[in-house]
Length: 134
Image (cartoon, rainbow, N blue to C red):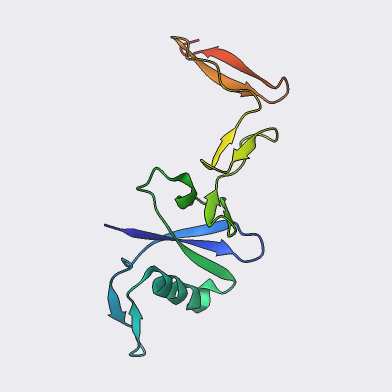
């Protein structure tokens, strides 16, 4: 199974790159003969130490989880106080639920209507039903 690592700008906490890396349990010998890896922290420090990653923090990310705070994406913000990746805010009025790490509209989305989907109107602060084939 692939292990992914997110690179985070130290100044902005924004995810700027994601790579497929070495599984955290693997130990390898670096070009200088030193042993590398064996844990998530060891691989994060190794990737951070590469000269081309200067100014970046490396954190493991997980795409195979229901836990949204573990999933990184380009443009996400890393919040170290929650050890969480937070997706961009969809609209200025939406608030982050720190239990689920999902953005929530000021008013809950109405129930599904057959043949329609709901679209948020930031100007009117309401959900608008839009016909699917309309």
